[in-house]
Amino acid sequence: MGLEIERKFLVDKRKLFGLNFLSEEKIMQGYLSHNPTVRVRVKGERGFLTIKSSTKGITRKEFEYEIPIEDAEELLKLCGWFVLKKYRRTVEYGGHVWEIDFFAGRHAGLVLAEVELTSPNEPLKLPDWVTREVSGDSRYYNSNIVRSSREQLGVRK
Image 1 (spheres, rainbow, N blue to C red):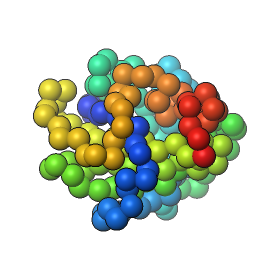
Image 2 (image 1 turned 30 degrees about the vertical axis):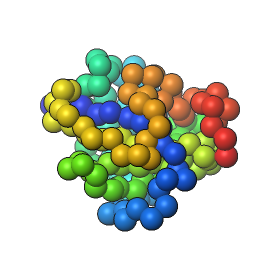
Image 3 (image 1 turned 135 degrees about the vertical axis):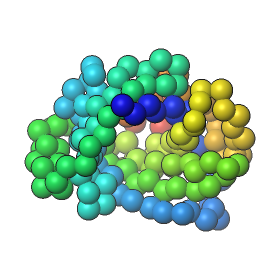
């Protein structure tokens, strides 16, 4: 069993210019179930199936399995409207690798940063480009973002 300990933040995208990103990947992810969360993801040329428990604080159980890309693409079709499109860039800051998601499609303009920790109490130095922590705000869980509009999230394009 995997354990995900993650904090999530809104980002001021204007302050990201000039950062040296370590990587960038296009991601499409859809949701087959919301309780528990069952996600299918196409990340680059690879497919994944992920099952996540409810979040307690910033921690939840996570089970992720690589699946054939063809299977992932077919499963995404089953998700219908519940598909997110985003570009993920990574950057190192304060001894952590931060994942910054730039949402596309109907969620264009939303930018979120996530950082995985080894324990819920691990100290974390925040970069100046984060604006507000939304770790405990369920509106910003990807499984809920997919069911929301940009306007419901207070995002301007």
